Length: 142
Image (cartoon, rainbow, N blue to C red; front, side, top):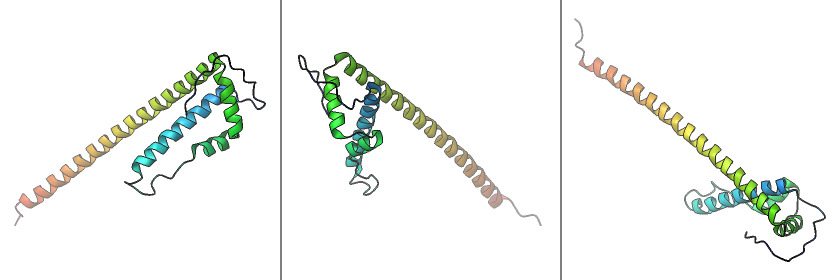
């Protein structure tokens, strides 16, 4: 979805206005659903059925209780309001960066937990092997 600011264009305020804050949230969900959809397309051949097709628009319209006309009319209106549209996009970008940082941190924590778990498993396996080795090398007492 590409948007551009239109100079010298008058577009009236929509009857059902979506607040700039809500519009930022809608754009975040739209971008995330697009990214998920792109990943699903890449993975489709690898693991059939793992990813289900997503219709980002339907998901967003239902979540925010809006329709396509309301979204488009608001987006067209905000595109003529340079300061407002910049704020909308900046807020959306900030939210996306926060989500990215959250999930990168979560991945780091999970990776660290896996390393610890694997390390403990290796230690236990090593100890078990040492015990088995000791049993086989011990001379039975008579």
